[in-house]
Image (cartoon, rainbow, N blue to C red):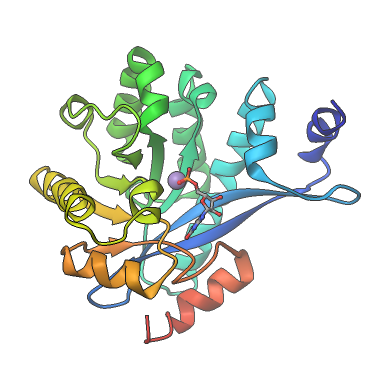
Length: 258
Ligand code: G
Ligand code: MN
């Protein structure tokens, strides 16, 4: 209850911030996108885990205010990188069920793009498979509106839980993010390799950017490379970074050992 109360003050007290985690083209090491991740630092509670406060915020309309702030901040940051002369890349934000159900989400996004001047192609929204499953009808409308704006859509956490290949046909995704669980359990036996290469082939068949997330070790990276995975994201490359460090990373590029 205490966290909930403090959470309501967090926005106006400017306690939220975004961290950015790079997405990598494995063949070249170049950064192909940044995922914006919401963080909360409270003066007394300290750092509150997103897995704790996001579900709490999502229970109320507070999430809608937070998401508006997130969309705006991410768009402004991406535009700032472009203005600094960095090659344009998409920035992605995560949408929860409550945001997806908000009837005017696409309107908010459109207004933000207009206001900031960011080209819609440089914004990507990530929707988890499980979120889609429980909100199929409304997701259909919202995602279609977003797509019509020219915003990219990514399918997050793909392949575990209740994968329905029908989603791939129903929505025009640009990116397929393989669920972290695949990578976490990856030991290289035939079944695990089989599943991942099937998922990669599937994404490629739909002409999607296939991205493996949660890469933490050299072994996982080597295995993914051997399975012809083209893009990846995870602690092995970089943790989610506060904006100044993220900017430095974009300027300097990743260390070449990766
Ligand atoms: O649901 P989604 O996939 O958008 O979750 C992103 C979360 O995963 C972020 O909170 C981020 O900090 C975390 N994360 C990013 N890279 C890694 C990783 O390599 N390993 C683990 N365990 N978590 C990661
Ligand atoms: Mn995500």
